[in-house]
Amino acid sequence: MRLRETVLLTLLLLAACASATAPCAPDTPIPLPIHMIDKAALVPVSFPRGPAVLLLDTGSDITNLTREAAHRLGIKIDPLRKLPGQTVGGVVQDNIGLATDLHVGPVVIPAMAVAITETSPAEGVLGLDFLQRFDVDFDLGHGRVTLHTGGLCRGQRPPWRGEFQEFAISRSVTGRALDGSSATKPYLMLPATLDGHATLAMLDTGALLGGLVNPAFAAEIGLTPGRLARDPEAIAGGFGPSAPLRMHRFTALDLGAERIGGLVLAVGGEADKFPLVLGMDLFLSHRIWLSFSTDRVFLQPKLP
Image (tube, rainbow, N blue to C red; front, side):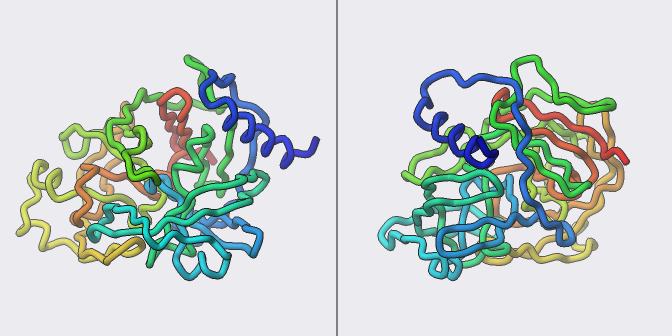
């Protein structure tokens, strides 16, 4: 059986047996096609009516397409259903569409609801509703992402060479669901300490500025508006309206036993769901395994 057929069969069986306990242990690795443009990890996908390029985005609870891309690809849009969402620039209201026969590398998704946005990085984003079907090994510093349908077993660790850290994480922040309810704890939140202040950090491959500190947590650290006014300005684009930010150099970010000094993160915006977002600077300098099957994160500084 070819790899594509095997992956499709696996996903169909998982959908049909959602209430049963899935077997653990990573199976045959499935490489995800990735094109790196600067800090953006872009994934080519295809639909029955054509291809699209989506940003790989662990910070988006839902896969989305721009309205222009959805029309080009023949995605059916429900004009009466709205899905509210919080972005760095404020609240947006997305429509809902139905994508069928979505091909992501060798993986085929027969049907998948997507959000339809007015603005989005690339032609849309590939979000957590897709990624949570797997355990995901991010090696973006070497331009690689690998999916594992089996997931790790409890107590099992990734088959990496060298030393790395393991974090038991929480899923304390909920996201959106396409039926209008709250999704079930979609975000893996990593314990972190920024300039001596402990918090939980969301890991976001869509944070191309490197990361984001919300104003409330910045104030807790002691960053007053007057102090931030001396920092360089930046603009957060992507979803929804743009937002003015300040790029601040922090003294130290502690992730377990690892200390990262001099990290520059954006401060500001209106998305107060997460105190701290760690983005592509972390993903490009580390190998990161997100184990959605066991609520763990594994972190290793990038090896040569």
